[in-house]
Image (tube, rainbow, N blue to C red):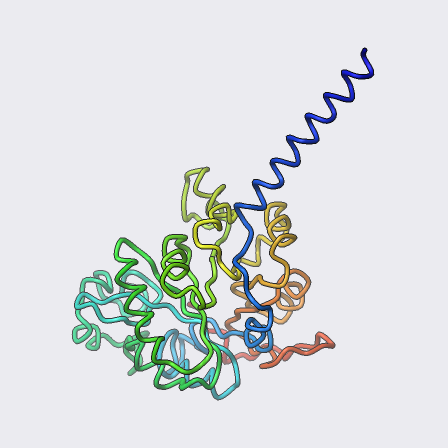
Length: 300
């Protein structure tokens, strides 16, 4: 009798654990995608906000920085948001204080007004996304981050319309599962990615459930992203290792800032977004890296 009870209890525990695993698998599993479509992003390192130096004449998210990335053969990661008059512009920060020393948010100014503000004391201005696409011209792959807010539907739609006419390699990503879901519904054939990090350590949220669900990719079922992009500093966490086991081959590291970090990230990631140094433009099988360049040490 005791032996039978023990077997029944073990079976129940086994079924519960199996159910938890299946449920977790359902939450985090990525969308279906031919692995070959990710090849352009695995074959070259991706320059974060272009090949920029904020202490030079090519600051982040500018035409000059994107031109430099193309010249060096790097892919490009960039950020898009909307101006007050509904133009899709390329800028990372919500506000202008850091990049232009001007009060107010990007969304509070028209594009014409934004053009009056020099970036980091240079001649560069916040560019239109359409102008960036024209400049890159399909020369290198693009990762377009959607800076989603309450206007995420408008931003997604206008960004999609611009990319519809673009012939180069591109994919979209966002921290917002709702933005990723928009592309799942409206451009299902496009490669889409879910961004994440440790929300509490990066001070993006003090709420445990935000970090639990967003930081652990537990909302992947909403947008079914084809790839994941994660802050490489937290790659040792158990939850990341669990997600990696499910999504192996589709994980991007952001943001790598030295050859040493790149060498370490190669063990756990598949795509590499970098800044402040010059890695090899293409992936090298022997793992050798280019040395750090003093002129690429500008801080964001």
